[in-house]
Image (tube, rainbow, N blue to C red; front, side, top):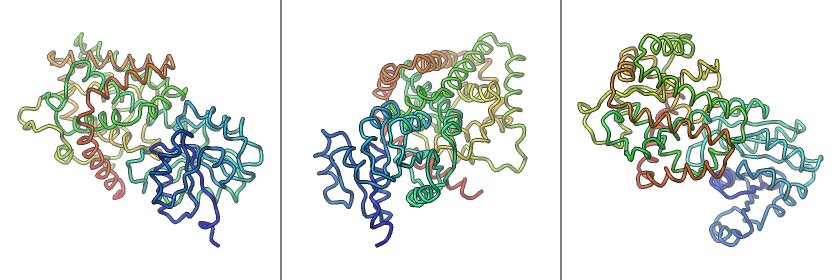
Length: 433
């Protein structure tokens, strides 16, 4: 019998990524794919999968005792409790993985609660369950494993056709803080600001256009997902707290210069940040995104171009200022880029490498007083998210997230369709390079 016919694969947690992994592994020809969720969900999940080749087991004990490769697909804040409960029952000589977005706490939990005769090889697909994994980064961490078991883990994961990136837990957490945490904070702050102002941005002239289409669609995409995905990354990753706090400071510092119209100081700060992040790019550097005309295809607005108005793009100016202040080069982390970070990086690069567009943005930031109320609300919301993360409040994070999500929920279906098209477009663009 072949490897795919004899090896038992198990997934503890039937959320979005758990189901995604189970379905992908089964479709790839692995004959013994098992999944479980909370015991109270057993009957409903069993009914859901009754016509598939995926086996539904009652709980994590059954997965742990039976399977040769086990993946914990649970929220980062609950990983230790779940591993403590089911880990001691882990089958001898099996491989244990985890799919949380913060790896060090996960590895610590495995080392603490798993028997010493099992192998620990966590992984992290750097995308959500609605994204085609082909060509996307998939981080693999060899925490404790023989060569034979590590090679087996890689063979199991190879069916995703992702680009495997081999990192330690510490390296993973530092990079994801740089790549994901601040990106999420920016989009979360945008959504909160629009909600606070009772605005649907696609109806506001200075929130319509190619760059704005990315902002709106990605912000709504984040708010249509589960809050704990972003909360775990932000609150449980120590590096993320530093990045998010600096982003809020950059937003506030730039806004203070804007309202005082300190043009020389404002321009000098933007130029220094621009030179640090983008100054080293070669002239033949292929842009991440393509053009304003292409981005116009992904608009929720029907507003004609002639009615659009300039925007300060404070969220983007502050991002580059944040990278400059922390001396982070985002291009060094493109190996672990998520689809959302690629889009964020793309519009930021697009703005800063277009002289006329950047000049219009600076002029709007300094002199268009009618957009100041929107920028002020953004400053307030950026600080609010940073304080929530600094306090480590999962409950506060959930309440802030849910409040804004409810405001935009009627547009989630449409924005997700457009968001998927944007991600597909930019992924094809990257493949061509």
